[in-house]
Image 1 (spheres, rainbow over the protein chains, first blue to last red):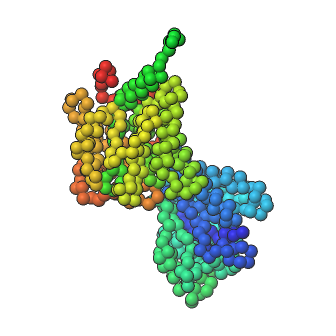
Image 2: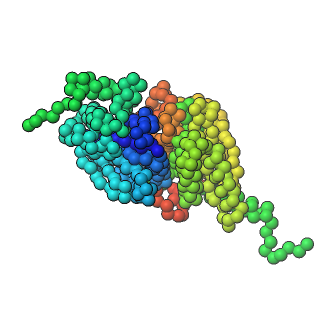
Length: 232
Length: 272
């Protein structure tokens, strides 16, 4: 069955960006080349999924409904911590399936209205919830993406630079991991990129992401390894 | 045929219940639902920021109620649950105002006949369509009867007078600012014929279903945006609500029982 692969998220001042490649794999086959793995959770948060696509997408759907339902019933939105905890419980509920090999490992990120910062939460299959600072990645290409993020992430990234950073790291993941899809230039299929800031959730249009992808590709023509980090 | 002692005919029981419910509803203040060119407007007098009479149910559906707070809050929550469950089980497009009105009608009808006391509520369910022709407004009363209304619905204390006046002055395709000022003017009428009141932003609860918005079309209008609309700004400003919208950050709705309705205009009890 299809598996989703790489998701990255990184914070920047007063916001967070999340991006995911578009490939789903079934063993060594490509199951889908334009799958979407980064979703709107509510107006101030997003969720990206890696792992068994069917279960993961269903979990996200339920998560979205729960957040919206709470908001309408109570007349107030859940705190970001509250949302992160609720998602942890849902992952814990899938533990039985995860032990049989159908794991779902989401990455959750959002804008905290109380503290005015972007925050990132990662999970393990038992529902363990860990807050990440700066950046994080999940999925099969996550190690390569995280290596890239470690070198590229900086304290005061502008929102645009944060998006570029995410696209660069996904490129590196696709470069090393066969299950992660790189930008598909012939079909114009690009990563799904979303930002969450004080203005709320926003998914970048294909044209916007296309511009970032073009920048990345142009750079890699000269230096296939991507932007070099200063040695000292 | 001998009548057992204390026999009350079903006709009398139903009549008493209806009178009881009507009396309860008439005590509260009115809420207006009006279709305008860019969507559907909800407007009521309600100084409370936390206890709403107007609420979102689903993407294109909203709910307005008058009467006893704990009773219509009960219905509202059931409505949200119904809509969210439907949308999750099937698809968001499969949640319709008609379906919801049916559910409410069943519930209200059952309560009216089976419980010892009917709900003292009147409800409007509105669904904004892709075009003004597809807008739907349903009005439900305490006994479970449903009526589909064209253009507007008035509920609550001064409903009859306001309704008569709206019939003359309401026109399809009004702008948001025009329909809001009409609604606010009518809400400020004194049924006893006294002086008209001019209601201001903090006294009002205003919301719209904005046709132009994607997905969740319900937005509350309060604060500076409401003041601007009430200030009779040039009505060419546009059919739909300007963004950024007012985010609803009110604290959780209290669910205490009893009547939280602010006292309405004084009425002579014998005319009820």
